[in-house]
Amino acid sequence: MKAVAYNIKPFEKEFLAKANQKKHDITLIANPLSLDTIIYAEGKDAVIVFANDDVSALVIKKLADLGIKYIVTRSAETDHIDQGAAAAYQIKIANIPSYPLPAEITTLALQEAADQTIKNLDLWQANKCVGDACVCAKNCRALSANKN
Image (tube, rainbow, N blue to C red):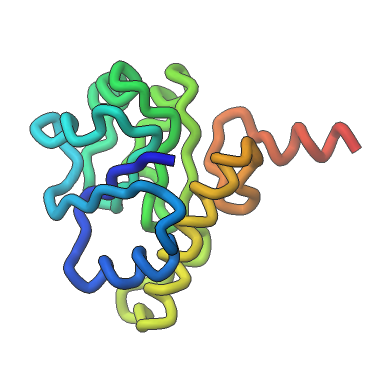
């Protein structure tokens, strides 16, 4: 899968590279996602964002216009993402459900967040639900549970 990761801090690069193991083609950008930086998502399947990136309805529309199908936020919070707009454009969203509070961030926590980010991409690439990381408006976990 091709992805662009916005708002990447220098210390995050190693964790993402270790988690990814060259499975996905990920472009790392230090700038946050915004209308000015959205062009870096061109030709990608997914964007990887953080809690202070602009993932408003207008940005989501432009991401959809570029062909983006997936958004992974490297945070537990998802209120920075216009989930209604993402649902309208059929863009799936995942988070890092166990992301720690800032005072609790350790090397282990950073690696686990990177691992979950890559796991989300892996599962989407295999056309599977991302489980507890799913922030899908369609609630696919409930739908799949009803099929059993």
